[in-house]
Length: 238
Ligand SMILES: [Zn+2]
Image 1 (tube, helix red, strand yellow):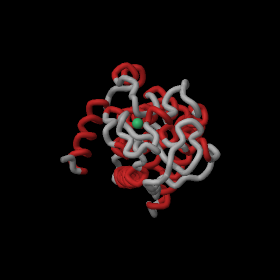
Image 2 (image 1 turned 60 degrees about the horizontal axis):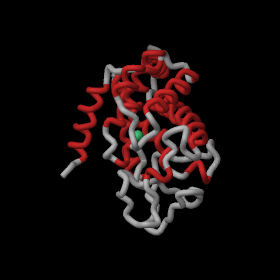
Image 3 (image 1 turned 90 degrees about the vertical axis):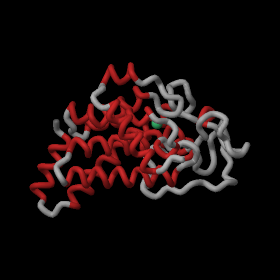
Image 4 (image 1 turned 180 degrees about the vertical axis):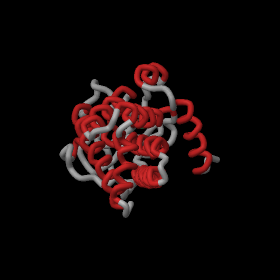
């Protein structure tokens, strides 16, 4: 039986394997996942959004590698907002966000970048694996810290994707009831999938918003504002 600790341990080992790989090497090493925005899209989203927020190239690379590295383990539904695991996804994001704040507060900027990269992976996958963009505006507010699972009776339309918030079940064939969608039916992981462009737009907007929220939360947390700014600079500008 997998306990939370064992899952975390596995992830840490996977992350340490992936750590150090970046850019082209990472794209070549991780085969495109069947359950996520393909690796290239996670890297693209991090590069595009973090650069515009003033992050340096090494900081961007470390956060992007951590983000993309989450796809080394596609079995944890909450890490990718698969299988309607919205509540679990929120718990993970909250934990990673808090851990990143604590690491940075203690001067461990590298560990903070790893944690925030993991959280960004789920934020970005949310728009690829749920039906959010089919029903809402790409910039509409969404609270990643308190999502709830849809009920058993919430149906998923695999064509229009209209309806209450839901996501696709992974792996293929794992659908618990016939009125739910499989991941294959509603994902927006590649440019060939319906709603992919909207998913990417939303993921970019909400990646930016999430990082701004992290920076604000950090500055609000530290009473010595000069130290807080110096630590945030060490996090952003390698
Ligand atoms: Zn994923």
